[in-house]
Image (cartoon, rainbow, N blue to C red; front, side, top):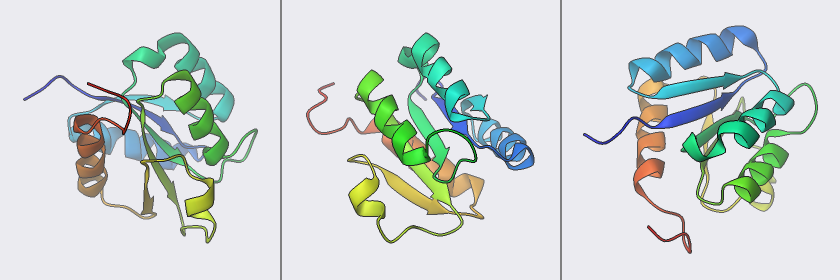
Length: 130
């Protein structure tokens, strides 16, 4: 197999974040939890090169939205994979998401999330190089 992928999990609902983190770790990922956009931004600033993917709720209670956080993450690390989640996919998703991203609706299956994140880790974004 390859090296373990590190996922920055941004979920402001504590119980969902804890459960999702445990499920992703069971799927073989290293997980860095963040409960807010500010916490996630700090992680990206300090450890961004070690983060392969961002799994982010679109509707965060404080600060920036998941869309804004993903844009910031891509500015800091252009090759980071982004998987958005929410209870329902917004009608303006395509116009607001960063290129090359995916969406999975809550409630989600951890295996499906793992499949998507693994695929993101194996496929460089257009123009990124290898």
